[in-house]
Every structure is written in structure tokens, then in C-alpha cells.
Image (cartoon, rainbow, N blue to C red):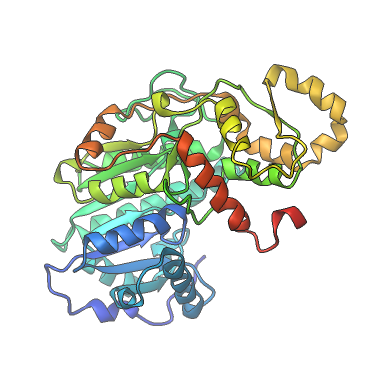
Length: 396
């Protein structure tokens, strides 16, 4: 994308701010984590101004996307005055901003939150690099320029715990590239992007955050985007899957949105977090086996309309089951398509080391709730909101 996306300069409204007033620049604010983080940052920093980079065909569309986000989050309309929308794109040079706007943003910004990423698992590595690595280079360039203003406080970069790739042993927060292989281009591109940010720690105040699989908030199950486990629940609810190949004892790392968002908001203001990397994950000891997750979900009553819940079948026995289901029909099924992205997450257990981070957060009142009791709320919210679809899944 070579053309500049900006038609005018909304940043001019911030040009008269005092040097002490924080200006937080956020990419990816309309995503799932962004929807959890924004309300916490607004409450935490009542004197701050916010600049949101949001894609749109024009400024009006970008503004409407922010309005939809605020409505979803239940943010008071009075808070809208603290937000400036920049119509831009992390995949474009200078984030799609004019050189003048980019320079003005760098002169104003005090904190950068780079949340934006392409989460698709099935892209070629070259495309994932363009979307995840190159966008991180652009964020680093902005932060480097912002450092010259004297206003910069922190560069907050959201990576993923799944840069661990094929590593079966404990994966520590100090580990990045330890010779692991990767199950998809998303994991690899995020690892490569994190390497850039890690090297940048020598130049700027940087904190890296690695969430695992984010599910809804603990008490309500509320979440904006339905990925991962939700995609299997959606197919199950529609009666489109009868068996799932998975290692029944494998423990996927599920973490509630509020734990990640609370942890990130706290650490972004925690002085000792500069230069550190944090696993915002459950950890293997606090994760549940797939068979136990299925058992709890089945007992919620939400899937009583099914004749029976999908059966968990060990991967080595799945091929014979597929033959019984007719191979051609399976290859064209929604489950087959889903497994191309998620098979390894059902069979390969990750061991993210979280002890130090969990202890620090607990000492500051941020405690991750056990996953089991959260699953009913997760299912309720997903079903009540049709997994984000306009047409009800049962009728799709």
C-alpha cells in the first residue's frame, strides 16, 4: 500500500498537550485483547490521551469501528473525548500515515502498545512476515523516533507464548530462538518479530508480553473474537462434528481475558518490568486435560440438543474412524479444514514457565482463576452471542 491513508490530521488536537500528559498509541485496539485492555488503561490513567490506529475505507469507517468497540466495552461516552482515531494500517509504510503525521505522532507519544498481528495459521511464511514482522519493524521505528522527544515511557509489545513451537520441555520467559521448529507461519513470524523487539531492549524501555490461548473473562465469559476452542464449540453446537482427534490427557493452555488484560495493564506501569518478558499464561500445572474440558462443557447443559457430544479419539486411531466416516466426505468437512490449523494444539502439550510472573501479579491482586469453573460462563457467552455470527449457528 503506497498511498497515504490520512485525509486530514486529527493529531493536531493533541499538539498543545503539556509534556507531562501521557499519550498512549495503540495498534490492534479493536481485537479481542484490545477490547479487554482499553477499559483498564482508561481507568488506570485518567489523565492520558489515546491515539488508536484503526483501518477503514475512510475516516468515518475507522471512527465507527472505535464507536462499536466502546459500545462493546461499555465505556462511557464522555471518555470518547480522550481518544483520537488515526485511519491507518500496520501493514503499510509509516502505518499508512503521512510523513508529517508520523513525525507528529512520534513527537507526542509516551507509550506504545503494539497489539496488532495477523493470527491466521495457514498463511505462507512470507506473508506472515509481511504482516507480523514488518509491522513490528514499523512500531520499533516509531518508538525509536519517539525516544528523541523525551516523552517516551514504554514500548509494550504483545507476542505469543506459542513462539515455543515444537519445544516439549519447559519454555522460559528468557527463551526465544532455542532451535525449535514451528507448526505454522504465525508461530515463526511472531518469534522472528520478538527477536527484533528483544534486540531493541538495548535502546529503549521495552516490555514483552506472551499470552497463550485467550478465552472470555472469568466471571462473564465476555470476549469479542471467538477463536481456538470456540471454533470447535461452534461446530459441535451445529452438530457438524462427531469425533475430534486429540490427545485426551493433553492440557491446552487456556487463560481468561481479564487475567491477561489486568496483567498487561499493571506491568505496563510497573517500573521493574522494563527490559522484561512475561508469560501471561496459565502454565501447565493450572491447565486442564482435554477430556476434562469436554466433560465439564458437556455438563453445562448448553449442548443437550445434541444426541451426544463429539468423541475424543486418539490421533493414532483417528484414521480408522475417518475411513468409517468416508474419507472424501471428511476431507471436505468443516472439521477437516479446522484441523489443518489446530491439530497440533490438540495433541501437543506446551509447558510455559509462569511461576515468577504469576507470583508477581498475585502479590499485586491479579490472580488467575482455575479454568474448570470458568468454562460454563465461556460457553454461555459464546452461545448467547452466536459465536459472533449474525445467523444463529443452529440455523446456519
